[in-house]
Length: 508
Image (cartoon, rainbow, N blue to C red; front, side):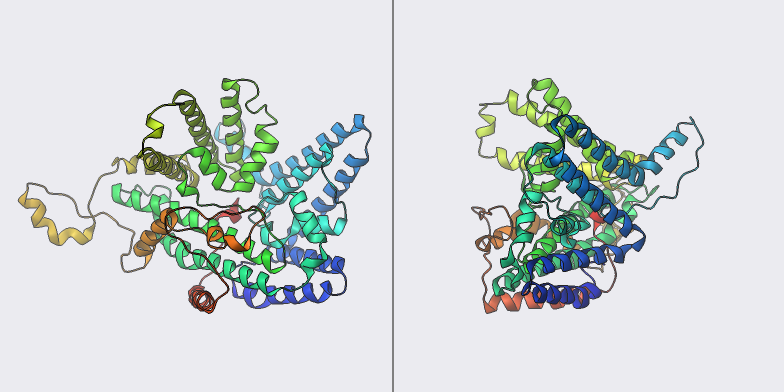
């Protein structure tokens, strides 16, 4: 079930909200149980075959967590190792078995039959959420052990399919708080407004940009210069607004239940270095990789060279987490190299007058954006050959034909001795809203305040949000003007929901 579907908006969500608050007036634990069951139904709606997998994972990990807490000190490490191996083994089988077999076959080392394994939706997110829980049980940092709250913590439908990766210490106390079982007008006003803004990002922006992306990144497409740049920019902002939309919608939905989620997206294209980008993009995953992988590898404690090694390893594994394919490995490795270059540059240029120049933040932001955009080419391409083809096309390797629409101006080029080809932009229909929407998307991403900044007075997330200084200031308030604006936006989204479009992060 999609957040941007009629079944979710007009059936599932009203029924779940009504049941939650009706039961919450009688017993808070009943409300938590209802929400957990509703979340399991939400998951089963995708593919009921994998509901037993999710429920078994919840039960086994809950039992392992309790065993870790109760075990003698000498047995706690073996318990943790066994539980982690079980979780990672499950993830490896479903997500990487096909990739492994295909790779072995491609090397000619064997000719194994490719298994027909369907990736369970959300397995990466609920696996990482539970790994963090197990590690914290081992460290003695877990204080809440009720099964109903744990089951809800893992299966909670606003985050289950595409994150954020939740932390038990943030969520379990909120699920146990009886005050969250009472319907509050403030929660509904803030939650619905944030949800509508997220829905608009998905339906009105990301989905309208999408038609420019597929043809450019298709295997064997061989786009020319202008096509490659338009397709790459389109994907760069399609992914941005698609993920931003899901993050907003998850936060808004959760607020309806009186629960705050962690911030997962914070204007990453405004970052002026690659470290800042990763502090703003998929923030919960970045924290997980830092806390449970980078630091576990040694972090920066063993010298600069080992720090660089740990950064590379962390990002390679982070890339592989996103998908079972060499394109994701290359993308992760590329970002690892970016981070190494950034930290080496910061070390070498410490105290340099260059970094204090007034123009440097703008230049650094532009360099960071271009680096991220080139990385997205590998992230989106069907295979490495297609990625290399698109990257070459961005440099003019496949030709520089002008758009066919400029054919009427050929005589102007002839007058200065030029005879360009006019067969470019083969797949982009300029009668659609794709190009204007892309232009609007770029302006919003670089210059507009993000949703959390707009709602900063009402604390939409667990983290404290501070309104950014400078630029365009837009502040939400519970007023008729904002109500009319959100209602108009919602109606526009409803009329725009004429096709089913999944969120891009569902496939990770």
